[in-house]
Length: 172
Image (cartoon, rainbow, N blue to C red; front, side, top):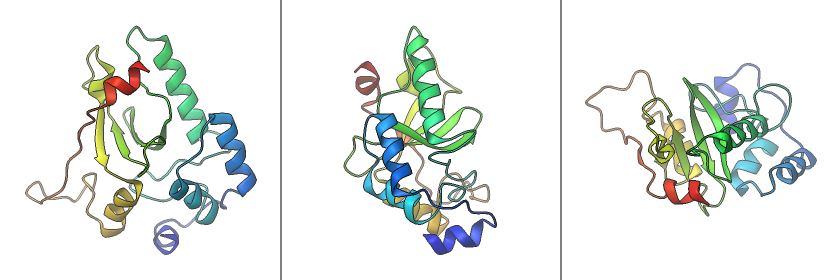
């Protein structure tokens, strides 16, 4: 992972310290999945990964913390909430779309949030991207993710599917 991160980014930020990860978890009120915490502590504080690259966990500007708080706050103000608790945006795809990790999932399920076709049902914006963070990262390492701009439309690429438990999680 670290080798690909260094090969694809000329300006990797320094890794987050264990104290910074602990501080982020205290602010969030829940722990990060072990693999996600390790990536921030051992590789870099964001700046690598698929296309638009992982958001920094901490720091100035757009971070996991700031985006999570922003989305949860905006969701709470809506008549129909759309952002579930403990689902962290880890990558901003643009156009309001995020890759997000379900921190309640033992495998750190990776979700796609796409509000563009969203109706009044916020659950319709959520899709299952990968059963685990490991699987999601493996598609990046292998160059087989659905998001690749050079993906052939006839290529056998796993497309995200609706997240079946989105409505229940949002309602909590």
